[in-house]
Image (cartoon, one colour):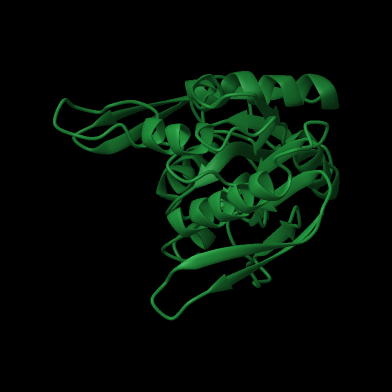
Length: 252
């Protein structure tokens, strides 16, 4: 199935179906405009295939916007992920694939959803470094990192993070002396927490500390991270990065 997207000067997005068939949209999905692109394509496809019930529609989102807002943080704030999920659900895709969602709440809120695992991308980083110890940065990431460690037959060291007066306090639950370490997580906004974790790992004797994240925002650049993290691995699910400090794996 082929389609084209046009954007008018006032910001309106419109889609046109060029060739019929099963629909498979693959998109970053990290902006509200992306959501409207998806909705425009799906509406045009539904209309052009209204009499053909044998075709299927699949949506693959590589970096879902709002996935960290997976709860109502207080009674006066909107539940953003729920709003986004409702918007996606209204399109009625037969399958929705989401790469490395921030939490299981995403899959619970979005109908017909399935997680695309990040294992193969972490594996590329793991072997490129040379069998480092995997480090989960907090309790929320432990389950996913444990699954990856089992697949790679790799050593895993959990860490735990608590905030005191706004600053993260890191506790390492294992021996990293004279070892290379690879921190594994889903998303990096600024990355300061990873900086503090890398500093703590090195204070306990780690030789080198690397970072893998699937969704690489790095909104404040890399200068501060370079002080403690030796190299970064990520996918291009959020954006394309050209920097010798970063090894980027293309998924889109």
